[in-house]
Image (cartoon, rainbow over all chains, first blue to last red; front, side, top):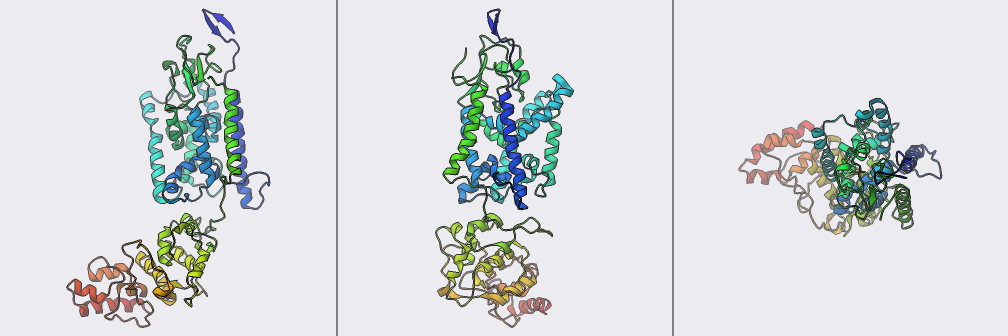
Amino acid sequence: MVTLFNKRIRLFRPRSIWIRRVVQWLFFLLIAAIAVNHSLAESGAAIPFLSGASLHAVCPFGGVETLYTFASSGLLVKKIHDSSLVLAAIVLILSVLFGPVFCGWVCPLGTVQEWVGKLGKKFFKRRYNHFVPGKLDSVLRYARYGILVWVLYVTATSGTLIFESYDPYFALFNFWSTEVAPSALIVLGVTLLLSVFVERPWCKYACPYGAVLGVTNLFRVFSIKRAESTCKADGACSIMCPMNIEVDSVKTVRNHQCISCLECTSEAICPVAKTVVFTTGSVK
Amino acid sequence: MNLTSKPLAIIVLVVMLGGISFSSLMGWWQTETTKEPATFTEGEFAGMANPADIRGSYTLGDITNSFNIDPQILTQAFGIVTDNPAAFAVKDLEAIYLDSGFEVGTASVRLFVAYYNGLPFDTTGQEIYMPQSATDILLARGNLSTEQLAYLEAFTVNLGEAAVPAVETPVTESTPAAAETPSAVSEEYVIKGKTIFGDLILWGVSQETIEGIIGTPMPDPAMKIKDYATANGLDFETLKPALQAEVDKVIP
C-alpha cells in the first residue's frame, strides 16, 4: 500500500478473484464427473465411489420447476428428485445471504461461458462485452423473467420437464447422449458462440434460474458497496463487471443481474483499498 | 462486517457440500428412484415410459410421475377407496378383487395405462381382466383401436357393487354412471332398445361416425340409444338401421 493524494492505493493487487476460479473448476469437474458416471452406470460400468446421479438430480433449478407440482400434489415432476429440492433450498439460503453466488461461483454453465469469453477478450479487447446497444440490452435483461414464467407454466401444466429440450446446461453435460434434444444442443451452441462477444449471454438474457436468484439482489444480507469518499471514479469496477453493472454510479449494488463474483471490489480491480467492498455494513 | 473472496469461497463450499451431507444424514438426499419404468427403445414411442414395465411395488403416484395420469382416475377406474391415492401400491389391487373370481391386478393397471395413453401393449396370449369402471373410462377417452375395443369386450368384467367399493367422487363428466354400465359382453352385435352408445364404441364404431349419424356430439356412452332418440325427438326405428349399418361394417 502507498498513499498518494491522501488515498491509499494498492500497487500490487490481484487482477481477479483467483479463488473463485478454483471453486468454479471444482464444481465443473464434479458435475462433469457425475454426468459421465451416470452414463457409465447405465451401461453397468459406473465408478463405485462417485455418484451416478442424473444431471437433473444435481440441478437446483429442478427444485424450482417442481415446486408447483410438489405443492399441489406432493409429487415431483418426472425426472426430478428430492435432491433438487434440497439443492434449491441450499442455494436460496446462500443467495439470501450473499446474492446469486451460485451463478458466479458454482454454476458450470456460467463457468464455461466465462472460459469461452476469454477468447472474446483476446479478440476484441475493450470492445468485448459491449456489442449490444444499451437500450436493447436493458430490455433483453428482462427476457429471462419471461422465460422463467413460461418454464414454470409448461412444467406445471404438463407435469414434465419441457425445458429439458431447450436447456443448454443439460446439453453441456449430456451432449454425447441420445437423451439430449437437438434444440438444446442448438441453444448451447448459440450460447457458446455469443459468449465470444458477450460475457455470460445465457445468464444475462435467458437463464430462468438466474432470474429467480437475481431477485435476492434486492434484499441480500451482504452487498457490494462503494465508498464515495475514497472512490477515484475511474470506472474500473464498471468495466470489470461481467454483467455490465455500473458499479461506479451507485453506493450499493442492488442490480438484479449481479452474480456476486467480487471482481469489482477493492480485492480485485478497484485500485483503492476498502472502496468497493462486500459487506453488511454501510460505507462512507 | 466485510467479507473477502477466500472466506466466501469457504462458505460456499461448506454450505453446498455441508448441506448435501446434512441432507444425506437426514435421508432427504435422494438422487434417484427405482420407480421409473423402462422406456420404449424404438418406434414412434421411443423414449416414453413403457406401461409393460409397471411393477407391483409402484404406487399410483409413481404411475402419475411416469405416465401423467391423475391418481384419482386410477382410483376411479379400479374402485380404490383411499385417503392418499398417490401412495396406494399397485400390488394391493389384487386384494380388492380377491373374492371376485377374476384376477384384476398389476397387469390390469398396465393395460389400462397403455390404453389410456394410447401406448402400444402386447396382449398376445394374455387374459387381462378389466373392471367395468376402468373400461368405461377408456371408452370415454374415445382413443381405442378396433383391436383394443375387441380385447376389452372379451375381458371386461362387471363385478358388481359388492366386489368393488363405491367410488367417492367422479373424475370426468363423461364417465358413465355406475348404474348404467355398457352391456359389453353382448354376443350379438344388434342394436336393441337397451343398447347404449358405449356398446357401439365397444363394437368398433368410431365416435365420429356416431356423431355423423345422430348429428350432435355423442352423449354419455352409458346412455341408451333409444332414450337419446326419445329425448331428442328422433325416431328410434329410423336411427337404428343407420347405426346398425355402421356396426355391420366394422363387425366381421
